[in-house]
Amino acid sequence: MTMSTGTLIIGACQTGVQLAASLRELGDTSPISLVGEEPHAPYQRPPLSKELHTGTVDVAALSFRTADWYQRQGISLITGERIVQLERNNDGGVATSVGGRTFRFSRLALATGAAVRRLPLEGAELDGVHYLRDASDARRLAADLATARDVVVIGGGFIGLEVAAGARTTGKRVTVLEAAPRLVGRAVAEETSDYFRAAHQRRGTNVVLDARISRLTGTGGRVAGVELADGTQVRADVVLIGVGVVPRTELAEQLGLAVENGIEVDEHGLCSDGMTVAAGDCASLPNPYARGNGGRVRMESVPHAMEHAKAAAATLLGRREPYRMLPWFWSDQADIKLQIAGLSAGFDETVLRGDPGADKFSLLYYREGRIIAADCVNSAVDFMAVRNALAHGQDIPAAAAADPGARLKQLVVAPAIV
Image (cartoon, rainbow, N blue to C red):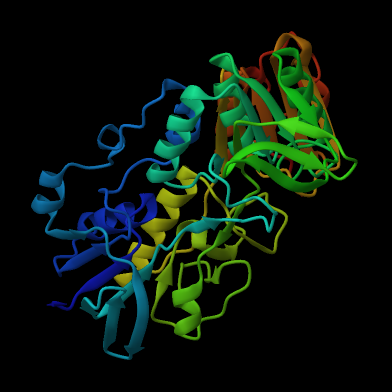
């Protein structure tokens, strides 16, 4: 079967849905085909790691849009089809799925996302060993967690800590094994990393830093423990491996597009062939943050997925405007809520407000005297003040922010003219 020509969006995810919606909002009336390899309609992924402790994963409740919405918008949603081959020319091209189904297009958007990074560990094939990326992964993990007593999380990033926190709230004995010298080290400064280690340990989680894993051990085909390089044996009924993701660039490479830590796009979301657009987790782009540290970035967040998709949709319609945004992120770890505004790369000064020991504080990041980001733990007021200031190109002087009694909102000033 061959679909009619129009816009083909590969990736039925947050980015893909937003891209299709934006095309319609911008007045595009041509056919749109949104193709995804999962059997479900597009759904929210962040809750997967945050709600596992409930024991159920209701994909239908997490859906972005109803079936009626796709029909009303004239968007053909095709699920359960994995595109494995792409051919294109100046007039369009054709995509072929693993089952042989073809999709002709005049415009192409890649929203292929990312895949979990896998560890080449002996024993990784044992039952009870999990990765977490999609709803099927979440359902299998939730089922195993329901009967587990000892849970080991390999990887101290946000996903790993969210799963660890959820498992702990249901009475599991949880160990987090992190190969680096601190938790979430690529995303936050030492002060925030130290807080998360201490906070999770206070709540009963065993956190092992600089962990070197030799293998996973098992009995009767099921995981029973994790063996460390020093011979330590950590009991485990369930193991979650959460060591990050890698962008899915296979289709882009087929087309000969430039790829480096993602599909390279310009500030408009346009790929190196000057025709295809790519957006979301799969894309490497010029830093869109006005106070960013330059260079190219690849961001994994819901706000970026949505805003980048809007820019890519505009580009497909010939309305090329530079993509600019204020990055922001969040992580819910049981009773700990982290909210991040901005990007802290290249900071040269920090200001700590509040008390990490009381699970309520903010860490503000500065570069050359200007605020560039903030980590806010259970401090929504500080987060909103920093986010709003950064969004409007304003500043919060470090000396004034250091006063714990001062409200950040009242400290916002216009930036100094440099």
